[in-house]
Image (tube, rainbow, N blue to C red; front, top):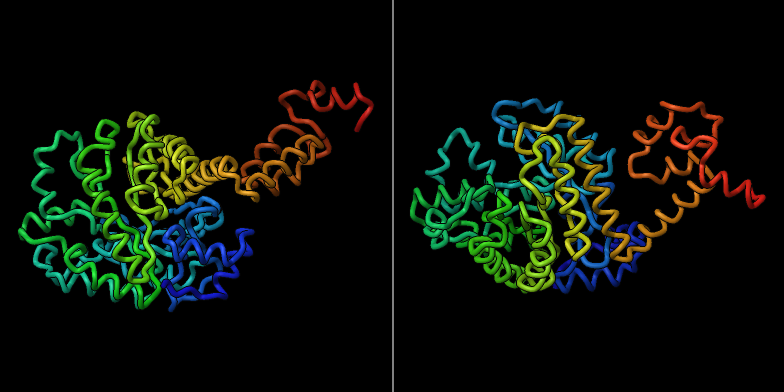
Length: 418
């Protein structure tokens, strides 16, 4: 039985327009997760999964070369303003703890982390000399601080590392957390602590109501590598771990690819849902081509819309800076908006009432040339307003594309309607 805070559940049910009992049923079945560490109070807790709106995550974080906490907090504010439902701190910089503390103080939405990054950044002990207890200790500390969900790469095992070098991939391990763990296992010839000590991880997650986001170390990092034996081998392990966690009363979601061609996205989603017992699916894109650096927010949105249409529940945003550099404030804004568009488009075909209503209302406002209502309902009001103001004075009720030949206005005059 998974413990659920009824006050938080009621708040989410109200926001989603879904009965609280229905959400709780999904949580107990493992089809929905509620992101809210029980030591943390936030304005906007959220739930992810079947029958709910598709959620969007925005990544921020320091790097070894760029480590300015104020800059990352500004990105956090931008992401929240743009509509991110969740934020992940992927910091690997020297002020990693300072940023996390600042986010936990000011962030109104759930926060996720990748704890192995903190281990890799530890200056007092080399990463390869870490033992199993060090891996568990970092999870315990972050849980106590209030982190709402962890990405733990528990699905990659020592036996799998032997296949990586012989597998015909273009990019063998693209996951940063996965690469760290693979290197640790190879160097020490020991089992992945996130796998061997999974029961200890379950205990921590249960105590703090933390969601385990089981990371995909072997997700494809190139289109040609999609849906190969390494990816599927890890997914099978994740399915087993999801069952173990759920039976112990711990919530789990599964992370997925990655770089996937259009024709394989539906199969990837259905495969995950089957192997992982209907657990919420958190997709990293997926990117549908490798040939668009500088526009990967678009390639990710295309893949995200298709994945969510077929049942993915949670989209990790991709910014225009992906594969090129650390994203700046504008990249964060564009990344969130692109993923929000993808999520909303999928919610329409999923039959989510709030999504359908929003589209119908903005269409009615467009028919009336009611610009203010359109701005209020659109996914990026500020950008829409600025674009509108570039061409015509406020008193005009048409746009500069058609002007007096506006089809709606022409028909109104022909039919004697206003």
